[in-house]
Length: 238
Ligand code: ADE
Image (tube, rainbow, N blue to C red; front, side, top):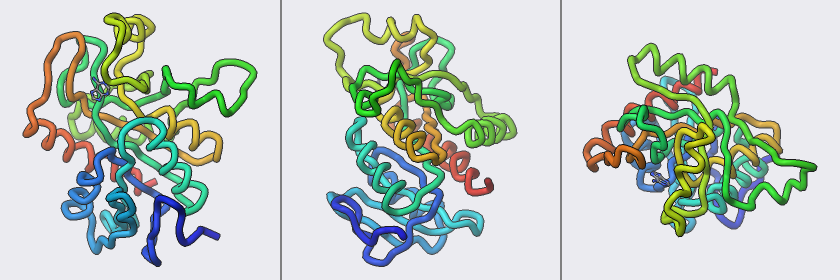
């Protein structure tokens, strides 16, 4: 039986759907609710981490901000999964490209998430775990991108605790191992989802490329983001 409230999410009777989109920025959650959802109701405002539930093409869909970084993503996704019954969680965010092939506004789908964080230590596994996304969700979104003529890349990403790195070659070292992009949340989501037996996917627009030093303008960010939301919301069809 889903809980009615947690320390960080207080829906006060408003529903939360089994499928939820998770942007980092809570104002993006509001933008998505206002622009893409029908009959949206707000289910959270604790710490301004705004959450909404409505319908997309007639199917129930929620959207909520997660904040930045693995601890923030991890605590919200944990509560959504364990206390509110979410079963399909899709992170939608931006990433820094680590290979020159990743153009601005391309989409990256995280097959797996490597990390420099200690988050995975708590699972106490007898080795090094590679948390992966749901293949079913990834395959669906990858095909959807192809149908829409959107360039999508699927591969490993690194969820980093640091946006500013003390060592100059930090990101190159991940790139040398075939890691496509750097971001800051996915490993927390994938680990929590896998441990709970639910589905998760993280997808990003490339907002900057650390090799070519290209960077998106705020206008480009908004257009790319809108395209990604439409693609992400198709997981409600599954
Ligand atoms: N998200 C978008 N760009 C990023 C970067 N360069 N590092 C970490 N997270 C990011």
